[in-house]
Length: 109
View 1: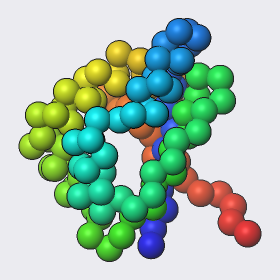
View 2: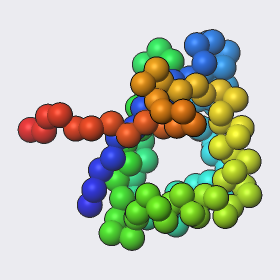
View 3: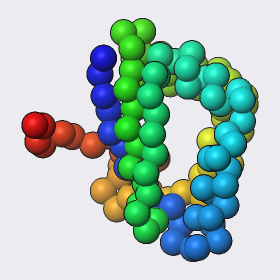
């Protein structure tokens, strides 16, 4: 099993952050299923201030290319992503158009 970690910022507004957390306590069922269908077995999101940290564990069927293609082919995922972007903002080191930024592991015990 592989693990990937990502980071992203939310807009620095307490009301925006509260609404984002509320939405994630009950994500749309189609989004939940799309995550599972992509081969993601664990997805945890943590927050400090307006910074998010996501941990994904994936099975052997997961590839970034497959997930991207599945998301692009799903109108509901596209709707979800556009909606989430109203709460989110790229971190300073993100490339143009990049949302969640893949982090690189620098230590393991």
